Length: 391
Image (cartoon, rainbow, N blue to C red; front, side, top):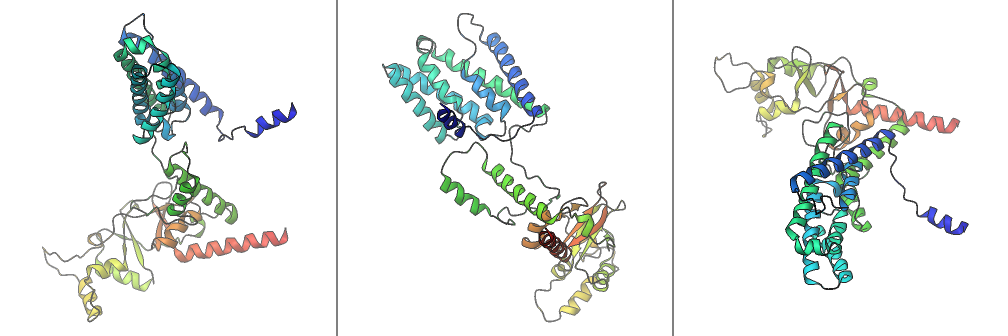
């Protein structure tokens, strides 16, 4: 007997940890979803002698309220999956005399069509089975059964849309990347600190099973796990700990002939552009000067640059004269409390050399460079090695 119990324990599913608040929210959502769907369906259908709820709706409620981030719980999944399955079940009941055979074929065809239409929804198989087993109801009232499935599914989905968003769960679910970095330009998802999207695709292809989690969510979870491991290794070193605080910045109206010497005299490659409240509105680099000065050809480079930054003193001119005319408006910034490992994929792989650091009021308080990051990571590695040696 103990051997049988141990065998069952070995098959116990390993679920993700869920706090009590999430469990309560799922239960309350399912209660409201089924209650409202039942009451509204009964009122809309207005037929007392026929059922106004289908049993598979309970399984749909589990997905929509307990795991709303699942790809199987998205709007097209519930509406497409349930409706396709209902239609398949009715057709099999009409065309196949044997109920067991009709039931088996209906479920199998439903799964195949849901895969093909990208609307896989597990309760859909139960909808197809319900249509076959309902017998006279589906045969004599096919239109009613289809309407019943559509109304039940639509109402449950509508309640889920409202309930999940009111309770701060985004639905329909969209994969998100948890980060303290304020990205205002696109970063290629293929560049990662440890793994790439190609690595993940190769593993998923080899795994060759349907996962109840979106691919982008899975990638994000792996990335966050990777970042957590780096944080554990290097300690709690933040951008505020390593940033340069004596930041040289300019304003939108700063003349080019004033900004260029700042880059040269301070031996820096970038100047944050701020407004009067010290909030970053752009960044100007040496590359911006070279690009706008038309320095594709090397002969006469110094003269071209000197001519470019010189003021024209004309009322109307197409020649740029202030920083705001050549700056890059889309700037990537970070906060003082951002852990330094979150900067690694940006500063090391994406060609970004300087990241302005903001305080909690989004005012410029510092800047982090590649040199700052490398020094911090090296120092953190030495501290880790030292602690292991003493341990």
